[in-house]
Image 1 (cartoon, rainbow, N blue to C red):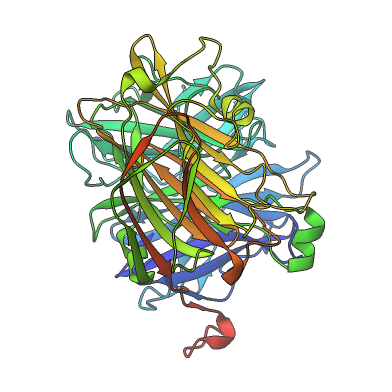
Image 2 (cartoon, rainbow, N blue to C red):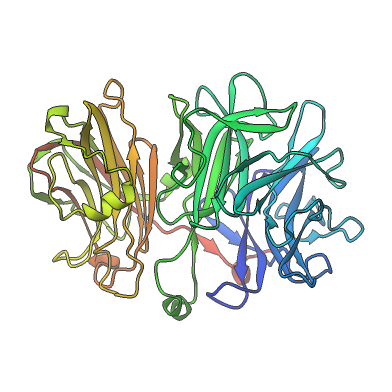
Length: 520
């Protein structure tokens, strides 16, 4: 959230070390979403209504004042008994909102009544206000194996009543964690406050599927009179649907930045290293670079892009001129700190006659990327980047496109191939992929932007139509030994229209002991 010009990030932190457990709410603030100050812990299990755990939640502004709703775990004969609690700032004049109170006279504000499974009832969303002035929140759950998002209403954000019908549900999707529900403008990139309604607005409903550990979303319509969300026709409402990210990205959450009129997406990039390695290095999990999200021109999906502020970390710039990459070519990008870089490369969309005919059975992009890694030659592709590559290519993380012809229509496959990312055998080296819709009348180029930060390779395909975040731990291609290449392993030539890259400075992260003001 943003309050009085300061961004606040609350995140789940384990006090036991680099393993899940003993979760508290940690707290950091920033004025630019890039450089951060960590404060003392915002919330810990301390009251009967959360003594067994303070889990995920959201912030809502009521008359300009932030209120946090979160899931508390209480002692009960039933395992993981979940309720919803609220917390408010102790001192609104404190610009950092360091102290938070949990009003014992109100908590818990929502209990799992009316047959709700108390062990599957968590992660309240940011609230929105209907035309009737009533507040709504929705909370993730499941009924049997059907994912469901229960709806609750309140006129004071304290006393809540469960709606007769859920906001939304879907068959055989398992537990819905960390739901998110927000409006997007039909035209333009400007973000909207969560309560905005109207004919020029669509709604996004996103869930984190506990069964797959991926985030999925649909585009649809919200009826404020019936409090029902309906996905648009063709919007797939299961684990074959659209994702915010096709790689390591989970438990995401958006907020409306009212000062810059944008909707910003946060997401957790979980690990590819083993638990033993996590414990050894002393940490596990990072936040992805915050992204701006908006509705694509076709109205069928979202587009994403790193927040503009990340560019303040740009240092030395390197560029390559437009040129044709012949089949089998590998071209190094020189003069770059390749372990920490921002790379933006554009390729001319190949001609349809040069595209490989697509087999009708190729319907799963991740499996297709796995069966056709960067080392497997095609026609138009694979072409793209080799990031975090070692001198002799023993290690490399390949991000690339393949272009197919399916009944005289373009199908673009974007892959993030981690199969050779590290010589460390215990790492998860899953290869990820996504199909990208391309309109040859508008998409004359295939753009690929990759943010590289040591163990993170975060890649945006075709102006943010698809994003894939990889977690990699090379053993050779580290720090100054890392290299970056642009390549074409197809039989057909590919024109690289442009390549711009920047070495990146380190963000400034201050911890409690470094801060000049006291949080104690």
